[in-house]
Length: 459
Image 1 (cartoon, rainbow, N blue to C red):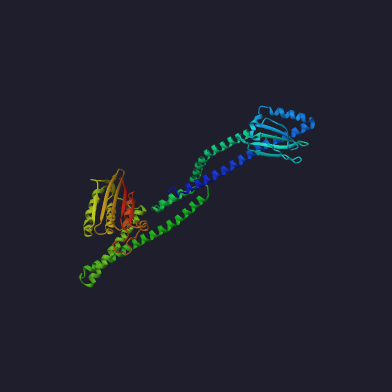
Image 2: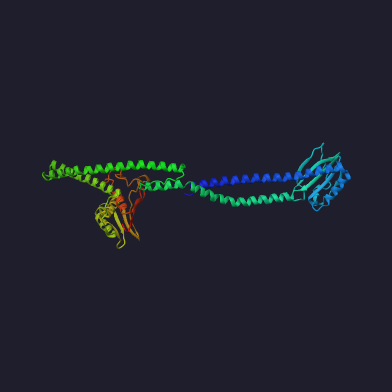
């Protein structure tokens, strides 16, 4: 699911951290630039106060007034105003305040004490931009007030802010792409691990995770995973070899026991106690020999040592024969066998082993289908691959049972009320894989099961 994808969650986290970091960085840079711009304006205004104070001291009040008049008539007079106060309440000089209507006629007595200089920002009614105002003494009882529009500074900072916003809108998606790439790269080892684990779960115990050269945590996990797989595979192989060797060693004494029982049965009256015991012993030996032979067949097929007698096999005819063979069993249980087959379906395969695959699947379906149920067999020619489906309306299987049905000796029928030894599906899987095919199964409890066999036409 995309919602539960670790790569997506890492990408979202990376994108969120990247976005917040970018916003914080841009905010710090913007505030720093605004502070620098304001400091530059304040330095200019303070420099003006110092220049007028020096002019007053060196050349007198008339020179100061002449200079103030000249500045009030300059080209940028609409962006600057000046006022000179005497004693804090008498206005000695004022520039034209037509563009500063909010200040006209106002008594902005600065209330300067000693050498104190005050700077503040005003929002002037009727003007789009604020003004930076300085009030400071330039001489005895003379206070100079200079106001400068912050229009240029605010326009500059507005452009900077707009540039930041545009940059963020470009960088955030780019950060998401980079985050996705980094997350996928960081999780590539996990994906390899998951892919290998999936193949191992499907039965390919020889698979191993490729260990990268970086030696990071993912590579260490892969190495540990491979070591664990080596031990598990060794244990499984050991158990299978023990089972196979045990089965091989039991076959000979069981054969001799059966031969002895058969001799005793022929030499005694079948209705006597000895004859009955001999008959039962023969039957049990046959059952045990069947289990042993099937186990050895599975081991041979799984090890790759089985030699297939490949011939042209008509799967459609093979299935018709199998359905006819099991028809009496189906009729005795009142189960209907539905067959949907093409006229012919020729593949290159081992006839006897394919017969056993179909027979085991049919037998399994009939065994677990209740009376008045149905078993369907469908064969579809898909070009290079052939699809055989055996489905039933039986008891179905749970997810836990579904994961174990191909294990040797495993039976869904825990009470053992049905005949069998739990090897039929294991044998079918081994023979299908020996042909280079695979078996898939779907099942729902109390609804039925569906086995799908995929075989290559070339065998």
